[in-house]
Image (spheres, rainbow, N blue to C red):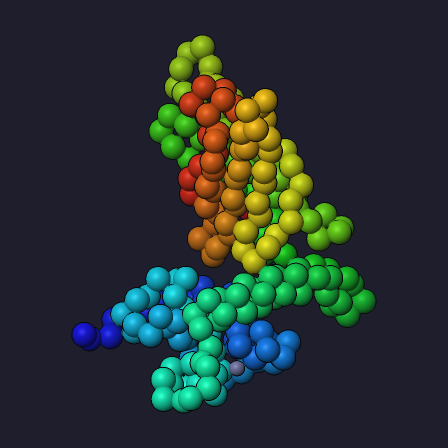
Length: 217
Ligand SMILES: [Zn+2]
């Protein structure tokens, strides 16, 4: 089967998340050096370009990962995925840490900003602000029925969460039945994708935050 090229947007995402650090070098030795390397297909199928199947590996570890001839137990996809998530978390923490620019201390922060989901009958916006301790304060509201003369239904979010990899997770137990509301905010170069579980009954009728948001500021 002909190898399908990795779409440029997926390539960019893999390279950006790893900042050209090798997942296996980091997983084994906490080596955070920038390495020459390639994007590996973890399941060995060069046509499976799903982002979860891709990892940036240095040339040595890429060869070792792909070789099936050796006697010793080779790296498994699950092992490398675990290393990859450790690396992404370490990178997002390091790259969000304060940076000295001459005498000024600043923060390289790709997350904070104002995110908007626009729709014909519904809309939502989220404001995300980095706190001094590195966590994020998320506030915002969602509207349903924006054209109605008697006004839209409304929902609000206001919580503080931690960034793990590219995601901030929020959980809230809201009824006696132990139902849990859960929201995942996943950040990328394209903006923000929100996924929710058990949102019915949390906000105004039909109101939710699920969907794609573009970054306005
Ligand atoms: Zn390596």
